Length: 219
Image 1 (cartoon, rainbow, N blue to C red):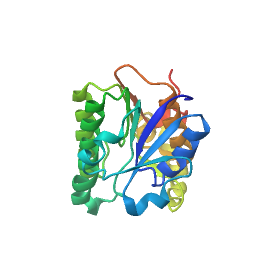
Image 2 (image 1 turned 90 degrees about the vertical axis):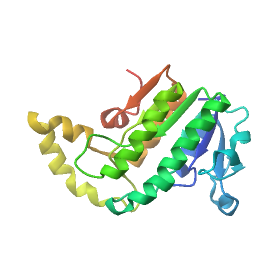
Image 3 (image 1 turned 180 degrees about the vertical axis):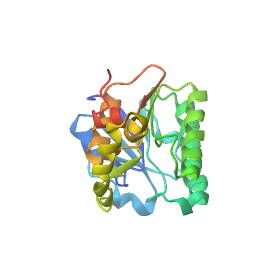
Image 4 (image 1 turned 90 degrees about the horizontal axis):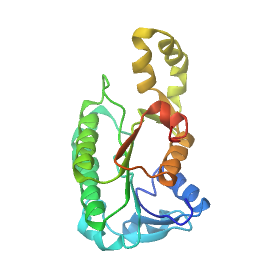
């Protein structure tokens, strides 16, 4: 990824704060979008672009020279009771990012969506699917990652579900769902995102849970 200039929204979040150092370590130039009051949270080594992810015009002119855009902004700890927040934050930030990236001529747009179909989190899936549709309509070369649940600090309890997932993966009737809605680690997410940056696609490429677990490496 040496030589790439990556613009990241959500660089101060759980995934972004770990991804940015990985990209920098790989030789990429990283510009992180942040509000003025969050400037101090941006990982060391990143250039800071002051703006609001919910307002594309606030950072439209700050993408100069960037070839890759990673959209990570979203509601922390998604849950069934946050449907309104998903629309006001996840959907708004996602659609603004797509529009700005298209206008800026970004070569590669990377978006973290969610695994679907699924029996839960309908509002969250709806919002993320709407953003995926906007990406497809934009004509941007894109990578869409579809994790279901990302294990990390404060998100460890699902480890207790591993035996149930393994059992479900053994049965033909539940195998596909268990793999699509499987758990991924924070480290796997970071590796898959970094691999996406390093290997831009032509058209729209999707990394499902098995691909994320494999590091997102192209087949």
